[in-house]
Length: 193
Image (cartoon, helix red, strand yellow):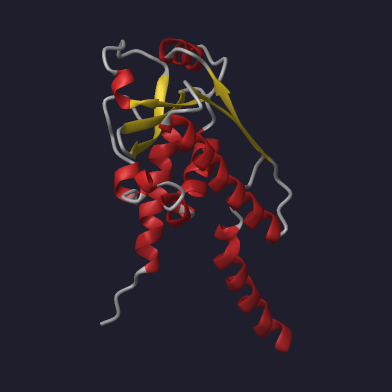
């Protein structure tokens, strides 16, 4: 008798906390940047740090996923963009101005936009799985407060200025994430009359 009453409560609790099981698949990122002395490197290391935080939360809820996040250096932005487009590497952080005067048919898509001391874009190849991009976005936005305090230039980051349509097209995973994130925020705030 009591078990029948207890079962729906357990089900509700499980469904409520199911969204906390963050990383639901193994993720491997190699983020290309130009130099370890530039802000692109700091942003890349910060992305890895907050994704590692999300992985630890996932492990505390019984997850067994893995995260491999590395930084790779290349001397030229042109080479970085070429390697991303040719799918030799899948991620990079570049200055937004470095993407100007490029052909519009590039296979590059934006994941997130970072308005720090200059404007930076976290880019990927259009062929990267949209579910992985969604998980990266969830990992970063779930720990946005921590991300903001990793560097003084990040203090003005908000949900609204990270997911912004720019000159380069957004990745489908980011678009899906944006819709789900906004719908989930609406569910959290229920007006009572």
